[in-house]
Structure formats: structure tokens, C-alpha cells
Image (cartoon, rainbow, N blue to C red):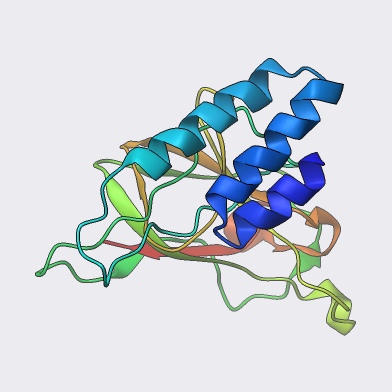
Length: 187
């Protein structure tokens, strides 16, 4: 039932997702899931600015192991200021030969709040490619917060670590000091 709730939430059927999550709680009590339901209910209670702007799709959050982790607040997309321009916030890629499996964490600092518009991790995988795509997440310096990387996600100033679901194929080299090649854009 919890998985069905997550699927409904991905479809932005928040009320239906809440119903499935509540059914799950009858069978397996979970304080984190109860907190997640409360945050979804707050989203439903938030007035919509105009009929042309429905509530944003809020994906279920995931941990760095890829399993559902519902004990965190969902992310609200942020619209850029009219004069804001997207640009590179961090890029450790380079043109040197690469190896798989970074030897150190890929971290970056924001000196002021920023809205992320994209995160790209480079996977050479020794030229073999991959049959499926993975996921990218961020962990803040406290180590307790995880986010699914989605466009228009506003982050406060601070230090962040990029989490990649397939580090075995994530490219790194001496030019990146062993960190996974990553490019982050935003405003």
C-alpha cells in the first residue's frame, strides 16, 4: 500500500496517495510516514495562485540507496525572479582521461542561496554505457537531509555532497581530485 501511495504521489494524485499511506499505517505504524502525510496535507491546503498554476508535482523523496524515505519534507519548485539567469554554479569536469568509481566525495559550496536547474554527472563506464539511467541526490553538510534532484529546487547557502546511484561507473580523474565529474547549474 505504501508503494501504491508513492506511485499516486508521483502522478500528483496527492489526496489518493494520502489515502493509501493511511491504509498502510493501519498495518504498519510509522511515525516518519505520518509526518510525510502531514506535509502532503499542508500542500493540499496551500491555495493555488491561479487556475493555470496547479499544485506542483512533488515526487516522493528517496535515500541515497534508492529506497523510499518519507521522513523529509517534499520540495516545492521555485520560480526564478524575472531578471535571474541560469549559470554554472559548480563544474569539476575536464578533458583528461577518466576512470570509474570516484575516490572521494563530490562536494560543492554555495556562498548564497541558489535555485538549482540541473545536475549532470558524467558516466564514461569504460565506453560500455549503461542500460538504464540512475538517480542523483544531494546531502547537506549536516548529513541528515536528502533530496531528489529536480529542476527549480531552491537550496540555502551551505556545503553539499552529490550522491550518485551508480558510483561504480561515475567518471573521475586526477583533474577532479578523484571526485565524480559533476556540473551544476542554477541562478
